[in-house]
Image 1 (tube, rainbow, N blue to C red):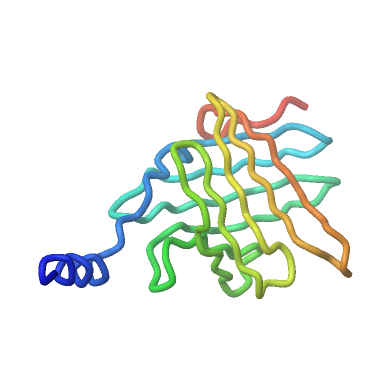
Image 2 (cartoon, one colour):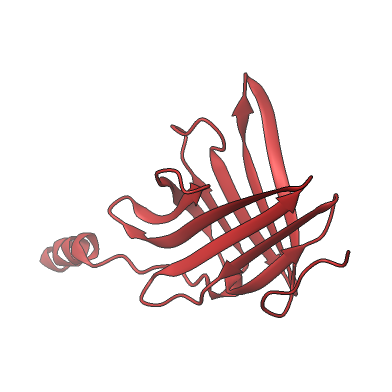
Length: 151
């Protein structure tokens, strides 16, 4: 009985181990739908991965800086599109090739999903706008650093 109670107490106080998201690391490029979107992720270092994205579309450029790290709420994807204050999405699912992060309090999106299949990385955001389900998706391919889409 004491052993079970001690084991339970140790499990509650043990530091959380970040899931292995090394499968996200690399330079990723999406040249679909008339846009050029690139996303770069560092390899995880002590539970921290750092990313940035640049999108060129219709003569406009946008960017996002982000990172994935342990927080008191759990492992979180923290996004700053266009340099706005950070918004955290806590991991609800992680695996060897898929991660889902959620923040029900955010206006849009409320979910961020990454999924890898060989040399392809799919990024998807989901949520509601004016009561209607909405989503955006990027289908990236692994590419050498700073590769551009053909013109």
